[in-house]
Each structure stands twice: as structure tokens, then as C-alpha cells.
Amino acid sequence: MASWLPETLFEIVGQGPAPSKDYYQLLVTRSQVTFRWWKISLRSEYRSTKPGETKETHEDFLKNSHLQVQIALIFGARILDYVFSLCEGKFDFLERLSDDLLLSILSYLDLEDIARLSQTSRRFAKLCTSGKLWEQIVQSACDHITPDMRALAQDMGWRQMFFTSKLQLQRHLRKRIQQQGSRRSSEL
Image (cartoon, rainbow, N blue to C red):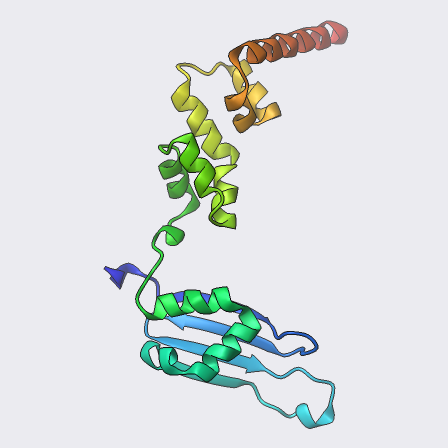
């Protein structure tokens, strides 16, 4: 099942905790974990220090507590937990789907489920509040969307339009049509 996964499962780069200026990279592939570091210092004794690299198989990484501590200190406990999951073969296939495919799936969820999903990660929060998703939801809820309704949605946002009552929408549409009519008459 994991054969369609890309070779690189996860990669993160960053600077060590203050006051360090050292630079680190963590790369997880299908078969190994690679940890690289570059010593950055103005001190003369560190100027000739070469970059370092440690490569471990997934099984060896799970046993290497020293490397795990370094990763936790530099990238945080959440990243370490995620790398642990990858090394144990627990892949998050949902996170690997494209935004367009996820938006298509999300459009079939109930509103309560969308609200809950938006609280799980930054990516899902962004997707659950995106105009594309709410445009799909509005289109599935409405029989017909007029060009005036589409223009109003562009102004106020598809999500706001979905939660606005029909009476308020009619009022907004009338106001918009009146404004367009007054602009046309002032141009003449």
C-alpha cells in the first residue's frame, strides 16, 4: 500500500535553539532518516568545522535515543512524534492529498464535521474556510446561482453568503443592483 509514496516522506530545516546559529536538516525517506548539521560561528576554532551527517535506518532510528533527543530539542516534540510514526510505517495519507481533491471531499461533509475538521491543523483550517469550498457548498445547496449572486459572493465571500438568510441576501442584491443602476446613470 505504501508503494505509491514518494521517496521523500518528510523534510524540515531550521536553526538550532538560541543562542546557537547552527543550521539543521531532517530528511525522512522510505528507508532511512538523515540528520544533517552545519556549524555557524564567528569563533575561529569552529570556522574549519565541516558539516555533519547521520544516516539511520528506520529501525535503528527508533532505537537511537541520542538522535531522538537532538531532534526534539531542535524541531520539537511534535516533529519527533511525526517522524516516529513514519518510521513505524504509520503514514498520514490524507495529508498527502492535493488541496483540490481535499476540497472536493470536504464539500460532502456536514457543517458540524467541517467545523471540527478545521480545528485539527492549519492546513485544514485554511481549506475549511476557503472560498473554493464554500462556493461548492453554496452551489450544491442552491438550485441556480445568478450572475448577480455570484458577484455578491465575490464581494462578501461565499462562506458569509451561505450563512446569510435569504431575506438579507435579497436586500443585498437589491442594494447592489441599485448601486449599479445609479453608477450607470451618472456615467451617462
